[in-house]
View 1 (cartoon, rainbow, N blue to C red):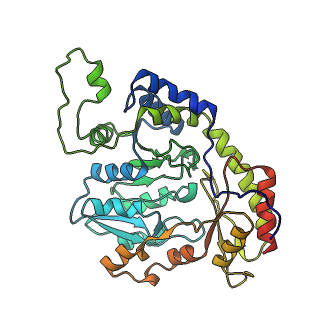
View 2: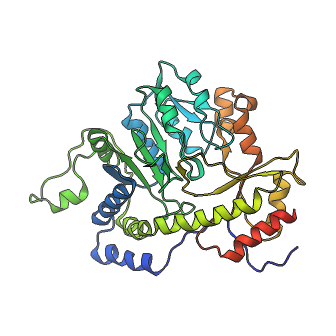
View 3: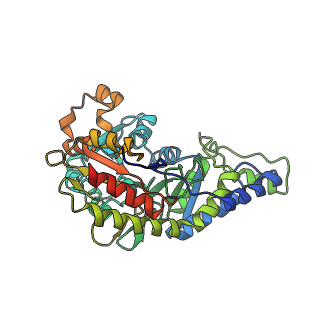
Length: 381
């Protein structure tokens, strides 16, 4: 084993004294649930991503759930999702009693392949959920050209700050969903955000996150009549974000550009150093896309590699470097495989990505020495 005194994590949140200080406000004010700091966080997020509305929720899965409900998805409907993504993208469709319809991916980008989309659209298709996987936007224009009037829900869990042809993720479709999990570039511990330009959709989603109430807790507490309780026009959910999270989110968003710039700098370093390896494919970025760099995900060509993907991951682990597969071929997870009788080779590119993708460490607490060490160990394999 080569000498390395510390373990390099696949990801680590970048938090410090600023976030700690921000938490004191809601703690000492007594306002712990959704309130003024969440509202500030929402406004800042909307401004950065150039969207009209931003609605904070408890995590990205709840954001996706609200989004599909807001699009009217229910039993008997179909929703198109990529076959290679985190399981939540498909799970929220199941929540509604609808059927997820998988589409294979473009192996260069790991995103939904628009060329395979048209064949999956039926009269039952109620929405399409392209994923901006690992921080790279899906080809939304191509998807829209095929989708027609079918609502587009961006799963932008990884894509805060990402840009597609001059436009930020979050305003490319009808609704978008983001994550603030600790593996993301900015974090509130858990947490999510919905964005939209549409006033009516925003009002609907705002009610859905708060039990279906047409009056927020902050509005009710600040109102002139103490006996007024919210009216409930629909069945909703308790998917609110806390003001503690909102306070942390405000601080984190102020650092978003700095965080992404740093990740971009070192992602470029990885690419320069690793693209010379004939058995490792570095991330492909189409022209006029700005990657959000939630993760740096490579593809291991085992026909040329000195080791299999799994053996390479073990080798890096032994040398103090964490890795992960990119994500799942969702159609091969037990629930979906068994329920729908899907075969592995129904979505061959998703299977290749599942078996050959490898994410290597990329986060803002890594030093130049850390990045060089990762490169050196990969080359030594």
